[in-house]
Amino acid sequence: MSNPAISATGLRKSYGDNVVLDGIDLDVAPGTVFSMLGPNGAGKTTTVNILSTLVAPDAGTATVAGHDLAGDPDGIRGAIGLTGQFSAVDNLLTGEENLFLMADLHHLPRREGRRRAAELLDRFDLTDAAKKTPTTYSGGMRRKLDLAMTLVGDPEVIFLDEPTTGLDPRSRRTMWAIIRDLVANGVTIFLTTQYLDEADELADRIAVLDGGRLVAQGTPEELKRRVPGGHLQLRFPDTGALHRATLAFGESTKDEENLALRVPTDGSVSALRAVLDRLDADAVAVDSLTVHTPDLDDVFLSLTGHRTEATKELAK
Image (cartoon, rainbow, N blue to C red; front, side, top):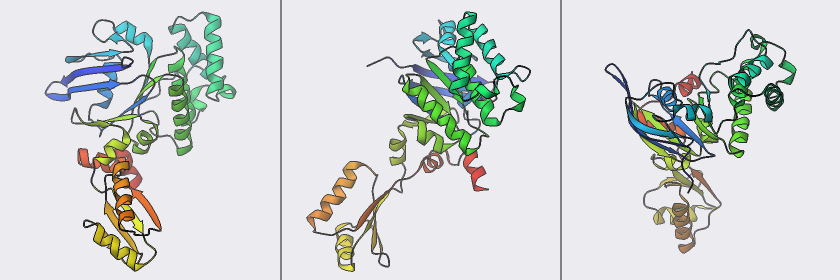
């Protein structure tokens, strides 16, 4: 097995009496998207700041892209990119000049820096805006330029701290496509987000952070199966089939008007197979079957006791 792109053990950070991180452990596989979810103040940005060497932990160890956090912070800085919550573009420079500046900071030869800038402007569909200042850009364009600046140094690991906050749905989906393309080319993404659909769409693994502690880790599907409420919705051709199925499944809810039966399940393949085998054994005909599983918002609510700020905004 390949070494993890990011590994952390026992990371702790406090500011006075305020414990921000209370001993977290992480392992992120290379070439994947690892998403950290948590309410405001849970410690997500602090985690990113520690792993990207911007803040020193009070305790714990970590490696990023094979470099030790305490022993080789310069090695980490040379291997990562960071796009924070707030755009880091310079409004006095044009889009092109922002990329030239990043190339100079990475000590790229002039010709290579210009070539890299042109390539990234084309990749992010910003060529027509290259000579304009970011004050004329939309929010989505500014975010794309911000990420393009991060990519000038060709990083192995990219930290994206709530990269799509405030973007319209189309711009968000454009950013998702860019993230998928980066991962397809071997880049590791550490993503914090308030948007649960974003984590569900992009993440290979998710960690839920609350009160400075990791309260759960797993794939999106694994986390959903931890929350009660999953069920199979079975529909039958007649009342006889519905009645036989009701007798077969003791813990179920019958809807006679719609000839439907709701059977609790964790949504796993083995659970689905067991239901189908039972129906076959009792010779019960089924018209249709639908799997219903809790979504990440249910997971978040179950684990933290409240919904994300993004979900609250959508509910208004």
